[in-house]
Length: 106
Image (cartoon, rainbow, N blue to C red; front, side, top):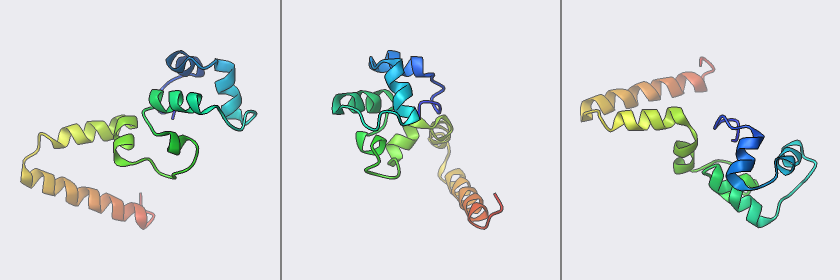
């Protein structure tokens, strides 16, 4: 998630107040877990939930995905400008792309 945001470990350290060395050790698996306060700091900085970070849930919910994916934000904002017919056309196209991916053609 840090890399999706284009952040270095130093950037995340600055955002959270957690030492960069600690972030590095967590990412490399040297430190298997963090204090709950640090998990909450990471979740806030990364715009996700603590449950997602610790693996309690497998997928981020829609809001987390929207916050963390610049392309999803762009598409969502673009949809606001469309009329009903254009939204229907876009949905059909997304359905088409999804079915292609499911068939292995993506």
